[in-house]
Amino acid sequence: MDMIVRANKEAFEEVNEMCDALKELMKDEIEAERQRGMQEGMQQGHRQGMQEGRQEGIQEGIQRGIQILIECCREFLVPWDQTADKVALKYALSADTVEEYMKKFW
Image (cartoon, one colour):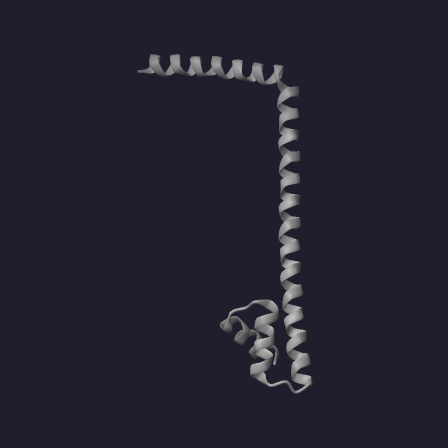
């Protein structure tokens, strides 16, 4: 048993030394690929972050527009139901969503 373990250990060490030698020979190529991968990852992350930020900004803008419409209608004494109809029509929202906004901003 001891002989088998020793033989396998020697074979492993030999293969490991070959891998290290191969890594050394290809270190420039490996580093270039690593750098390329990092660059691609950063670019993709940046694009995704920009898209998510854009979407978040659009949603905030829409919500602010709804808020202003509701507040203006209230100030000009437009009834609740007519204001809700205007919000639904202007922003193409469901009745439940309009109700939430009305309760939030009225």
